[in-house]
Length: 321
Image: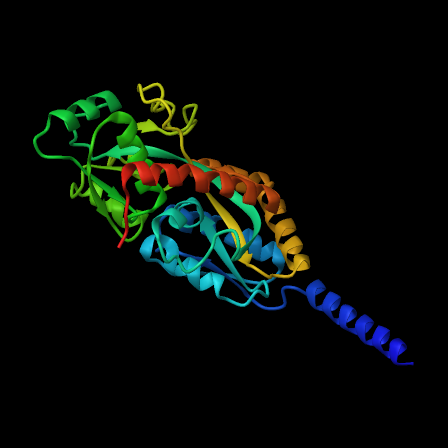
């Protein structure tokens, strides 16, 4: 009799759990963006916000928590309840770069998160203030080598993805810039637009409007092929820099321990959205590519990039306080 009651109890628990997950979500979902508004990760989050709201049939609310190269907001998300109601817009900065920079990083990108899907991939652009005499990468390198005063390179913060791509460029080009970190991509871009800094290696999406308006000049792109949005801009390889290809990305992840049924629901919602022609076009117009994937593909790419950027960080001697 006791065994029968145990079976009944287990069946009730499973039934209640199934009904709970089947009803997910039944309240608003918070999407943590570990960067200030206006940067590339924030733009990607806002691009999928409405569609994800429609697919989940609950409001998706963006929560910007910037600072410390994206690690503050990421750590906050890692410690949030694993119930599917707090998600994180992860990026190459927070999940592939930060572990090699911070000795006491308050999260582990593999252990503390459950991947849902990649959202987009995006190239980087080497941009300068329009007053810069250099019209291409070779001229920029020549100026950097000949100038008595070193050129200044803005970034979204020490250890951010655009900072590391900048370090990779310097290693390959044999030049050294003065690194000026800002609290996010948007203020770093504004620093170059205002002439406060000389150059920036930024993701295409936030830079594209400023390039089109003549406020920034693009010298090269980090893709293997030229971008359809800026066909006149050469690749780094065409500019004489071999091995400088780098692609940034954003991915939707949840705190580790989130129930598999909820992760499957989220993956289905995101993949369906990212395959829609309207979203594909929106990302293309922003200079990136919608990238729906399985959770396993996210983990595989993260492991490869963790090794890649660890090498760059060690060679460049990048350190954070």
